[in-house]
Amino acid sequence: MERLAPNGCDVVCDANGVETLEASYEHLAAPGKLVIYGFHTMLPRGRGKPSWPKLAWSWLRTPRFNPLRLTGENRSVMGFNLSYLFERKDILRESLEQLLGWLDAGQLHALPVTPYPFDQVADAHRDLESGQTVGKLILTTSP
Image (cartoon, one colour):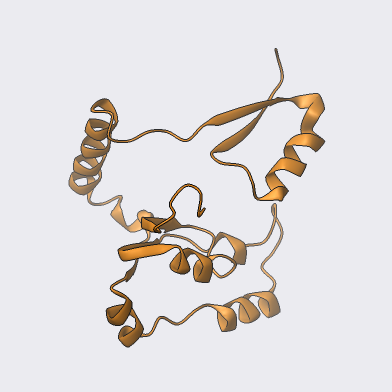
């Protein structure tokens, strides 16, 4: 991260939750904004049932952001649940139009997509676990 944003990030969007929130906050520049929109790491893998002890442990480890620290470091923490915006199509439409405008104007750039042939799934998994990848990794079934 330091190579890509040596002075910190203006915005960090975190859907992982407890496993990454503290690091996401620490990567913020001043005046940076941490946007929390999910707690993926608290959910069960696959179609499993929730583990109540794991959920409790995750809740206990969830960072509590101190308002004095936030103002002193000139950073913000905010959260939202996209599910609640489905009834506000006006907001979704306006936001999508703004994002698409930025994309058309070259102000936003998509992260790279790195394809791996399906028979190299172990290589893709290894690279993903290394923490050195940027963007998305995809598995392809045809050349």
